[in-house]
Length: 251
Ligand SMILES: Cc1cc2nc3c(=O)[nH]c(=O)nc-3n(C[C@H](O)[C@H](O)[C@H](O)COP(=O)(O)O)c2cc1C
Image 1 (cartoon, rainbow, N blue to C red):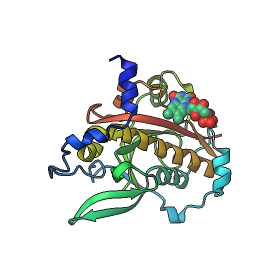
Image 2: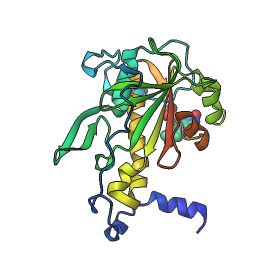
Image 3: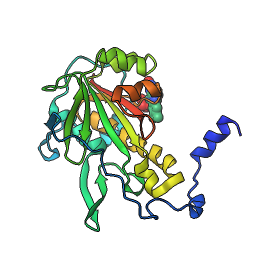
Image 4: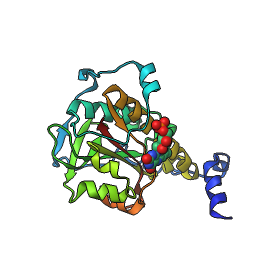
């Protein structure tokens, strides 16, 4: 089979074939954690809770109508409240569901097949009030931000890793979503992968609409160098790998 046929088949449903597959969940193997573990001693920043955030444009119909991809940004910073809102809208956790006294699923502002929520959100922060530049990770359950480290040539690095898309280097912040594949595979095995990519679309769409709310713009990015982006966010590229990016800035 050629690559195109293979890829087309990947787009099709294979849930029927799952009838012959015993997933790790069915084998009672331990469930992966709902978010990537983190060192409690790292530098962690509080974010603004959603109840305290006032957004400028809260008309859903207008926000849907105005949504478009923005590839030009001005040098104006995002406030911490605005960044908090974008993170909440794209991956915010509304509740953690317990089963047999264990955390079993998160319910978030976006849907996810089986509520497996396989993504982590990394941020390249360039121009956000009160935050130094560098690589961060969103702790979705805690609604906090973990500083990972500074990056040398941050803006040039992301332009290069997105195959020369220069506007990524002008963004106030670049969202990079990684997939922790076993979170989906634990339950859905061979049917996990198509579902996880479908999940990513919802995340980015909420980011687009949330940007409209704060007079900022974003642009979905799927054209990137896998290895270079994985290196920037410091993941192994096998169990966790980048799947989607979105630079955000005021315009
Ligand atoms: C999955 C996906 C991948 C995309 N990748 C890129 C990209 O790498 N670079 C880019 O400039 N735009 C990218 N876009 C944005 C599209 O080009 C854009 O959505 C399209 O031109 C329609 O314009 P609109 O979003 O303003 O309606 C992507 C959009 C999607 C949904």
